[in-house]
Image 1: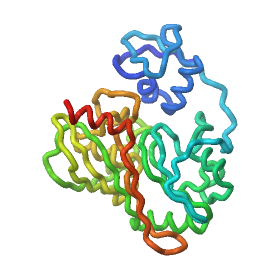
Image 2: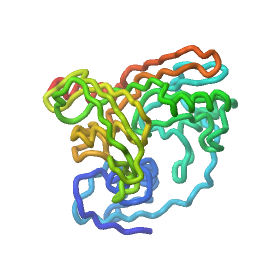
Image 3: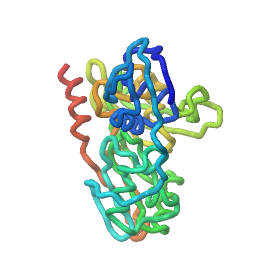
Image 4: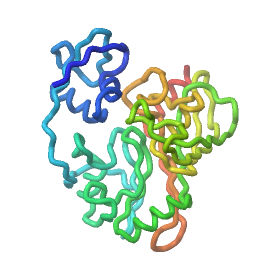
Amino acid sequence: MKEIEVKEAGKRIDIYLNELLDLSRTTIQKMCETGHIKVNNNTIKSSYKVKLGDIIIVEMMPVEPLSAKPQKMDLDIVYEDDDIIVVNKANGVVVHPAVGNPSNTLVNGLIYHSNQLSDINGEFRPGIVHRIDAYTTGLLVIAKNNQAHENLAKQLEMKKTHRKYVALVWGVINEDTGTIDAPIGRDQNNRKKMTVTDINAKEAITHFKILERYDKATLIECQLETGRTHQIRVHMNYIKHPIINDPVYGNYPIINDFGQCLHAQELGFIHPKTKKYMEFSTPLPKGMLEIINMFKNS
C-alpha cells in the first residue's frame, strides 16, 4: 500500500499517478474501477481531478500471470489475406499484453481472430511488426507468418514504408510545411517519457504540412521518416505545439477522455509476397472530429 499527498492540483488522477508511479494509465484506470485507488478514503473515477492536500491510497492489485489469451473483440479489419492483416486500432486499445495489462489488448483480439500469426516477437507480441500508442488511433499492419514479418520489419528499418498521421496541435503554426530533425532518447528525469536529447538518442525525422488553422489550434499532417517511440508527440512538443489532449507532453488542459488527437491515417508498404505496393487509408475517428469541430467553431 502506498500513501501519496497531492502537491499539484488540477490533473486527472490517472494522469497524476502515471507520472509518479511505474503504472500505465490503463492499469490505474482499472485500479480506480476496482477500488484499489481511493482519495481521502473514498472510491473515485479515473477522471477525478486531484486537489491540493488530497491523500491518495494506492493498494496494489495482485499481479496476474502474464499470458496472451484469445479474446473476442470487435476488430476493425481494413484488409486481410494469407500473409498480412491491416487493422484500424481504436482509441484506448493497448497493442500487446504487459504486466498490469494482460487482457483487452489488440493482440488478445488478433489471437482470437486468427491462429496464424508470426512468432518472431515472442509469445506476447505475435504478429506485431510495429506499434502505436494506446491513445493513438489508426492503421497497423500485422504479420501472419515469419517471412512476412521479416520482410515488413526490413521495410520499416530501410524507411521504405509510407506512414502519414493527422494531428491537432495547440497554437497556430505559421509555416505551411516543415521538417523536425531532432534525435530522441529517454528522458533522464522521467523514464516513462521520451525527449529530444543527445544522450543515448536515435535519429528522428518528422515532416509536417498544415491542413487547417484555427484561432487556438492547427490541424496538421505528419509523415514519419523514422519511427521512434512517441516521435510525433515529442517532436511537436519540442517546437512548442504539443498535441491536443496529450496527457504526457505539453502543459495544456485535457479537454475530455478521448486521448491525444493523433491518428495514423495512411499506411503504405510493399506486400511481402506479391511485391506489389499497397496503400491504405482510414477516416478520422468520431472523437477526434468532435474536438476538431470545437476549435473550428469557437
